[in-house]
Image 1 (cartoon, rainbow, N blue to C red):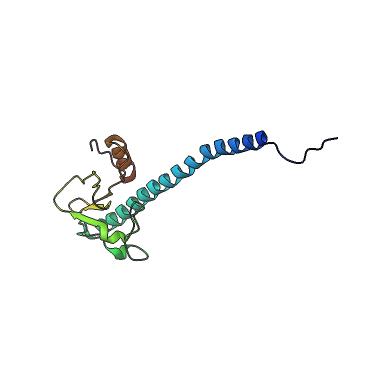
Image 2 (cartoon, rainbow, N blue to C red):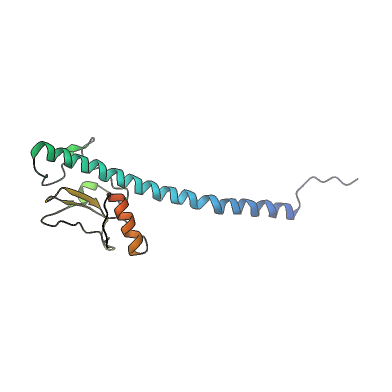
Length: 149
């Protein structure tokens, strides 16, 4: 009588192929979840800062001339999920301009825009491969409806 005590090569290959197929399905889902989490975090950050700007306007009757680090706990602008490093160093005040720049500068960091003329606070977003997708992400993250890139 011949007893079998190991898997055949065909059985092992079938198991490896099935595991590979499952991994190919699952791994992209985790990558998309991380990217989606960054988009949601950036969107919430914009909302937090806009509320602080609105509180300042309600109290003082004018838009702040700059974003105050002391509005936040701990002090400092919350971290932008699209950048590394101190967020407070990436705010640029735009004076006398009603629309904020959407385009991402490939040569520089993704920065926040603050328009002290009307209290708008936005962030640039990472390039999405084409203008339409980048504009859609910009609108979603910043809670706006910009029409062109």
